[in-house]
Image 1 (cartoon, rainbow, N blue to C red):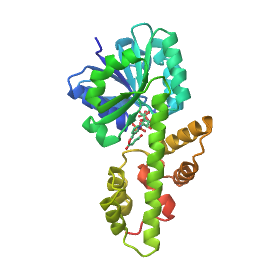
Image 2: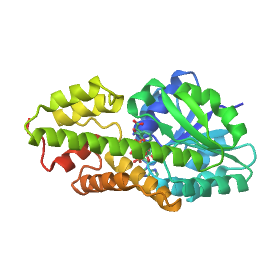
Image 3: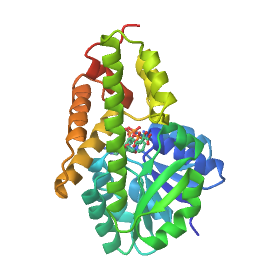
Length: 293
Ligand SMILES: NC(=O)C1=CN([C@@H]2O[C@H](COP(=O)(O)OP(=O)(O)OC[C@H]3O[C@@H](n4cnc5c(N)ncnc54)[C@H](OP(=O)(O)O)[C@@H]3O)[C@@H](O)[C@H]2O)C=CC1
Ligand SMILES: O=CCCC(=O)O
């Protein structure tokens, strides 16, 4: 019996994911640091837990979708944290994007207490989360992967099992590193075309007509040109992922010069106050000034 599902972290992604579980008729117990974010979901059918430990105590399988490594560790190891509720028969599925070392620490602690652990970061942003089209990059306990697959099928369109804990995290930050370099390349192309007196709209049209056509450019290109950045993937989280990918590169002695340069633009964008805007705002930092519209 998998239900009720527990869910910790009701940000952009977590809220959309819980809503899909509820819509699919699943019972869900939620917790969020800012408790007011539970209210809407409670009205839609969720139950609110008092703490991460309380949620784990009520649920055989608990998901998490938290901001970053420090938060995932705090929610696991802190007072009234996940570990306090873990024992045999309990399972923890962390979908947050964290580094492989953080994931391993959490996995070791959960399994030491008799629980099962699956890391399950996702590819796909706010809209795929709302549409139940996320791509899960899981690793860890294979039996838990099988047990949780019906829920992953509600939340996503694909779920890969990648082996030992750490592989899901490494895959996730590698994918986001590629996306970060692509966004910076697009930003440079748009900035260059403007300075060179070319039509930026024409640049997007040419890119879309050929081998570089992709969903990322189709979505983010027009947003960059309009200077409107509806927040789907906060820039501060993308910079965190670039940092995590560079750390993996460091650990395995793989030079990543292009990603390192792209990361510098994300750091610049954060320092200019764009951290809570969408990752597309990296264009503003690269371009140097606000887009004149
Ligand atoms: N947005 C996206 O497109 C995608 C994001 N991701 C990853 O998913 C994770 C969540 O992303 P997203 O939903 O966008 O992020 P948000 O910033 O919208 O939400 C972050 C969540 O973490 C919680 N949190 C932050 N700090 C703490 C803390 N100190 N203690 C407890 N809880 C805390 C927030 O709680 P509170 O409400 O109280 O602030 C909130 O629930 C991140 O790891 C991100 O990299 C992965 C794929 C796509
Ligand atoms: O981590 C965020 C990923 C965003 C995406 O895959 O579009």
